[in-house]
Image (cartoon, rainbow, N blue to C red; front, side):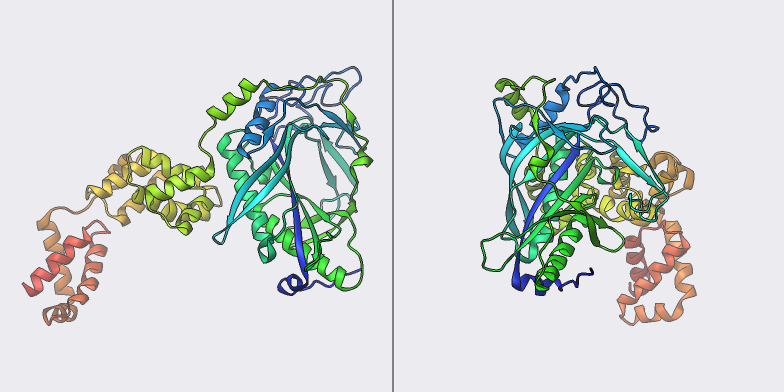
Length: 498
């Protein structure tokens, strides 16, 4: 049955959205959660496996201490309480990507509980309450071959890669997110964004959503406006981009409003989000906790993290994103929008490193946010993936400040650096890029330009000094951009009015 979508703004006049987000983050440990297999992304299928992560009889798991350290760091950064002791549980289900037919997870005794994360949307702060942060192992990865959608429906056959099975996985579960009104999709995206930046700052994961190291399951339900009775939720699984988090929430609000307006009931189910259409489709009915038949993992002893260890991790943690943003906003005199643009461009680390290396903050922002950000967009890569270093930007900024380069020549220097021609100084030397500083040479060029543009020269003599810009442009063209535009303007006006 096709559901008629209700326009978003109209849906919110009758219904209040309730959200819940479960985020899975793969930790960047060198080995898996319960065995010594490596965790390298992109390795040939089924080459990073052993009897433990394949669930072969007689194999026994051993907990990875580095993974426990990673989850404690995340829990502390989310203002959670770290429990005195916890234990693992078996989550039982049958699916090809889980060879043991159970997943080692945590159920009623998680490691981190009762936290929060503040996010900002349009100048308003929303506190997202965190119910729990728990540890589990990731599953394998299924590849469905022969279908049009890449999903199991319609596929000719399926393959399974168990390299991912057993990788340490942190699950972060929010409490119901309410009172967001028409900002619900933006709040969901802001939460996912802030969580990604926080985990990245901790250095425990690369949180690359396109590679699956951060995945969001987005729960949405609607309740009638003014009601306190929550509706039935749907869960959109494995949403793998920040934009898709926002779009999936918006679509589910429109879809569920259409279902309710038609007098039907929302089905509790998992759904799949489609990037190309921005819509969700039904997956399978959603299980309840009892369907997984949780029971304590008999092969692992309970964990009791020493308090001194937890305190040490708290003391030694790096500056968190919110504190960092407040600091650089004050130090660099940024508006909220300027700061957000820097964060969105992935330029904050690069600009800070450039400033630490000796550049002025304004110059560092200028080159990273304008010229280099444009180059990254053109090449379809992250800003940090460009073959330009903060040291390169420091040197180019210094050459401009010294008057050895102007902005046009500086852009040509970056052309050379990006093309692999060497350091900025080497590019300047190879390409002969330098400001024409010889007054006699510059004066001679200006005389030729004036002689070739008598009408413009006459206007300047008549007092229309603004017309000098055209002659400055001609001088810059004649010198291939290597003249000092300011000095050229001064000499032009001096020659014609002096």
